[in-house]
Amino acid sequence: MADLKGKTALVTGASRGIGRASALALARLGAQVLVHYGQAAKEADAVVAEIRKAGGTAEAIAADLAMPDGPHQLAQRVRAIVGDRLDILVANAGVAKAAVIEETTVADFDNLFAVNVRAPFFLVQQLLPILHEGSSVVLVSSLAAHAVVGTLPAYAATKGAIDTLVKHFAAALGARGIRVNAVAPGVVATDMSSFAKTDQGRDYTLSLQTLKRIAQPDDIGDVVAFLASPDARWVSGDTIHVDGGSKL
Ligand SMILES: NC(=O)c1ccc[n+]([C@@H]2O[C@H](COP(=O)([O-])OP(=O)(O)OC[C@H]3O[C@@H](n4cnc5c(N)ncnc54)[C@H](OP(=O)(O)O)[C@@H]3O)[C@@H](O)[C@H]2O)c1
Image (tube, rainbow, N blue to C red; front, side):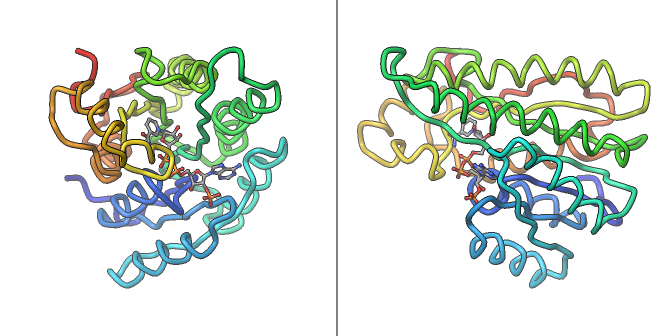
């Protein structure tokens, strides 16, 4: 696997789950990692401590990405730490809410799009001045964007928007040598997919997948690190399915 020594990385939503695993994977390869969180300061500090204990460099950084100016504030804080050079941006922070069409509220719909779509869009916009030739942006889509799983129409639409943004960002930024891709996880054992920990949820999840185990966050984090690394230098504009062969 490529060496990321000397590279700077921001991972949003890195206090828990897939973001945490991505931050740890990037740090293992030598990157300096900014561990973004929303509310979970203690958990983010623990991720930073784990990276430092292993000899890496990390710092926790807060911003509420549901707020309209959240991405702008986060970008300012990032620039205050890394200066004018960001090599890796993993826009992972996200929220989900299961609801049938009839029970989806306007407030829930707006919050899903604010955190899952608006925040990555404006974070890329605000960090553009410090992305450069060789930088890699990784967004997080979902199996839910590509297949009807669970009861998540509004959430699934946010991830469909991510797949679209990947192509537009990659097309716009390619001439500057910036790659943009997404990972699309299936069901992963995190707080977000806690139903996978029930017997019924586990059976449902395994019935979707050709590989018969429940995915762990580092199954995704390692692919994020690959996409962020020079090993993926010829991959751009793509969404990589990281779902144990779901819904084949
Ligand atoms: N788990 C799955 O099965 C699955 C499948 C496909 C795609 N995904 C996607 O993968 C990504 C990570 O999911 P996960 O399962 O790791 O979720 P998770 O364990 O619930 O963690 C979500 C992360 O996002 C952050 N976050 C949420 N709302 C925020 C806000 N308003 N402002 C700032 N940060 C916020 C949280 O920060 P704090 O806790 O610090 O507030 C946390 O670090 C999401 O984009 C999700 O849609 C997950």
